Length: 140
Image: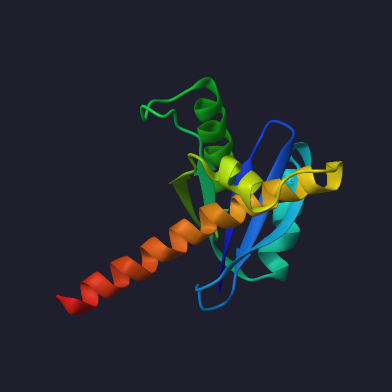
């Protein structure tokens, strides 16, 4: 089963997907946030998704902003609608900046793709933590 990550914005949502073994994260798509639910219906079924990781935009001080509250509300709504998969919130600080550093945006297409790159960075951090936690448990 694969893991999906979302970098949800007001207008666009970046989507990233893991390989079946949960080792690699790759940008998958950028969709309009207003069409996210429909896109998820297709992706969850087509790609056999077991877990969805949603980037949580907390402030640098670790507090909640208005955007954080919007994401949590949407997260809870999606979690109820797609209850067959596991949902996780994941700190997304600096992922958009990292995505811009990986591939500078020179066109509108680049800008759209940067959302999917940010989602892949979120997913990569999540997958790495899962591997580390599994390794730590095995060595005990």
